[in-house]
Image 1 (cartoon, one colour):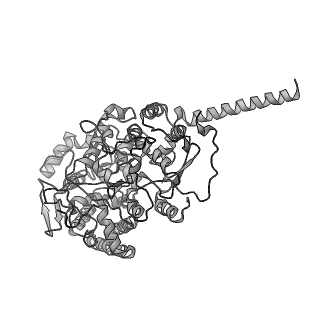
Image 2: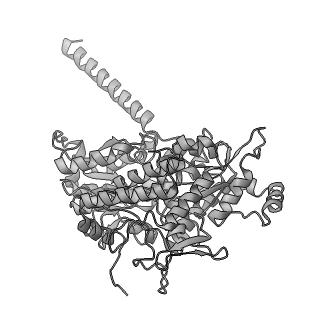
Image 3: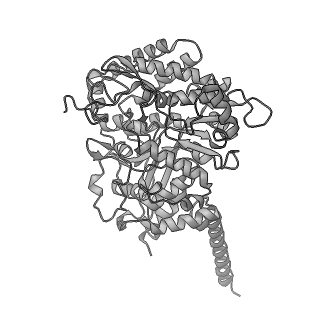
Length: 446
Length: 122
């Protein structure tokens, strides 16, 4: 008999704190700065604790659970924005012939660049490609203020505004390369750089090839435009891949195509202050845009050991894989046990048992893997104090641009100005120090 | 039949009925031991739970209460749903209790940060 059957439960204290927070990765700056959470490395060899496979986690994703070389978070969910399309429509010979006649190149399946995505969206928008007698949409986005629409811009703008290092290691972060949010020397916002502005202009053009109602759509409404077969393409989180299998919500089961987030044929180099254009060798930047919800342990908790046990058990391969296989959990893949060979060890049957259609799960899981592992460089993740506030400001000013209240340049200039205000209010010197830590920037490092 | 015997018999019948009711509620809400599971989910979850490393839970954890604050997706929804699903299994292995505090997306920052600052569960 276990002791729990006889031992009375303690009376709930009015001063009980949360032992565990399962929160977004962008809270880390606040967590660390205020010493609100504890490092977890001391538990890794504790025989009381379940063992979970840290080396098996995608390196970029593992970084989000660490700070200063120590683990603070326990793996759970992995977010990235990837690209979805209607495979049946884009591979239809009738549409392929018409596209080639109009654009003088083969319809790429999947499209590799945002410029190709634009052509495809423009081509299909307004045509009755689903045969319901009505004009359909090329692309769908969620552009409502407060509807997480800024995530579209962040993912799309990365390959327009980030350039790889020329040092021999393309991932090396210096003042001009692999930076997206702020100048790591001065904390001056980069959000209104020419690359970011060009990306916003591009996003606004792309928005013309979908329903005009997109300006008021939240996440779920935008997804439904794709899931109900009204839009050819969408770029968003992993939820779309699992929702496509839900018979209550999806009309596209078995027709899903998915790929890594597109690259850009033009991008801005902060060092030379010039745009580079190269359609044959586009600039490809992976992203971890999203919360990647995972557990951390409060430094105020009186049950830290117990808290770690729960989180570690959830992170074990069998439990974490189960959560990934059942889409309703909202847990998305980011470790080798969730991907197919040769990198991973999951099987198609593992997923079809949970309700996936064979084509769809191959598309979805392989695209996810590509997005997290296969890009030459990754967009840095913003996790400094005030991150939610910086993002809310960006969200509001982006909306001003897409609704025509201001130009892309004006919108992003206002964002930069407001960001500087937040930075100074929170303390420039400290924000800069934490930003450098957060993106692993080392001044003058070889 | 004495008065005492009647009372004892009544009490016994009541307890057996109550236990049966509890058992049926348990089976209804926790198919296979997993909250809200479908038949297929219960089967695959049992396999996953049996394969998972559970460590060697400290006997002193029995009876403790663990509180988790999580983005509110509901008991069968995103991110919070798995906590409900696996809670029963984890409580059985550790003897501890898991309390799930759901917080709407827009309030996650305010409520969790306030918790840290004021040292109160909000």
